[in-house]
Image: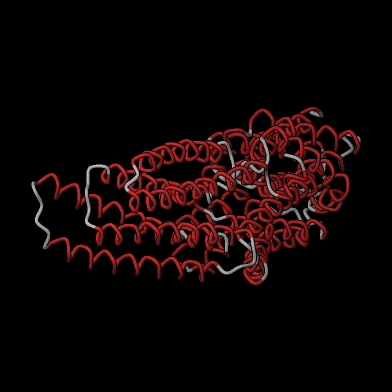
Amino acid sequence: MGLKNLFLGGKKEQEVIDKMKKHMGLLCSACTTLKAAIKNRDEDLLSNVSDLEREGDIVRREIVSSIYEGAFLPFLRPNICRFVEIVDNALDVTKDAAIEYTDLWLDEETKDDCARIADISAKMCEMLLVAFGTLSGPDDLREKSLAIRIYEKKIDEIKFDLIKRLRTKVTKNFWEGKILSDFIHDLTSTSDLIEDASDYLQIINISLR
Amino acid sequence: MQPIPLIASLLIALSVGSNDTSNALGICIGCRIISFRRAVILFGIFVLVGILLQGRKVMKTVGKDIVEMDLRILGISLLVSAILIIISNWKRLPVSTHQVIIGSLTGSGTALGADVNYGSLFEILLSWVISPLAALFASLIIYRAMEKTLSKLPFLQIERIIRVLLLASGIIIAYTTGANELATILGPIIHAGLIEEAWAFFAGSFLVFLGAVVLSNRVIDTIGKGIMALDPYSGFAAQFGAGCCVFLFTSLGMPISTTYCIIGGITGIGMLKGTGTVSVNLLKKIALSWILAPTLAFLACFTIIRTLI
């Protein structure tokens, strides 16, 4: 390792940071695409969500192997890997929601609520990216984490109203009900996972202080 | 008789290389801040720099001030020291090279009725008690200072700075290994006139380097994995505190143990984080070894000389 690398930060660390940003960017794109797909009932966009998830898997593998090759101090590596896994899980549930939506026909009101949830998830994701940026800058991470928690609360409120309304809806058969329930669960899990990722970011941030 | 102390000293130097590289750069290698190859080269260079720049004071204390040297004292003391140090390294028992060498020299000198300077001996014993405590307080101060300054920086900047600091503290320990540890080993043979000073410096440093290259892998692996439990902040504060403490005592010409200073530093950080984090049982074992190592060395040399000579 040259002196320049030692003082200005290693190439490996920078690579990992860039890839983590890319990974979170893919999650943002997946949420935005899902929102558009729900609104317009667009099958192509739904399959794009799956493509983004696959791309996310590749990026996750690259991040983990870079960390395994020695990026960051060993003390930090488990928390960084856990953060990346949580973001990847968020991508997985977004893809699951997209697949489930292909088998569903929702009424306009429900569709609007689901699109709003996907939209807020996309905003949470953007906020997570901003929060991640505070690790290398002077900004306060706590404000960003608070914003993420407020977004998550909004999604919870929409979710509870939605579930209340859907309970009165008559379904044709067991599978229709099951797929609808799974879709709502997966759609709202994305925001839960983004909130978890934000909490992990806080843990990473304080772990060296 | 003449080759015995020379060979024994060089064997101890080899053993110091195999064990003490981990004291200096084990954390850096474990954290992959620096590769093993570069670490041992750096270690070897700073050991040589240490003994060249600051080794003479400690060499005088051990080689001239404690006991009136003759070939018999030198031969038996260094042979017994080499055997004890090699056995304890092999059995993975923590002993201080300084304590064994000084215990042996005093034991041999007393048995042969040589003039033992109890004033110097008392000063050394006192420095063995004070140095871990000084390292403890130094580490506490460093840790607190880091909390007040470094903690305010962004996370990624802290990570980069800690890498540099860990390497710097490793280099200080490598330097004091040369200026203090190697000086303790070479002091008696240089002051007895068995080897030229310049030759001893280069041969001793080379053997420490050789020990690091050939035999230090196993210990570094243990330290590198074990350090995971210790966060980088604490690791640096303990190591740097110990390094500063050994540096200070080296300037005073006192032969003290880097390992005990690092233990003092770690204990200090543990106390700061809550006494529950300090393993009292382990500290008791270390304290026992602290008393047993010089006592055993003293008794072994005393008994051998009284029995054989």
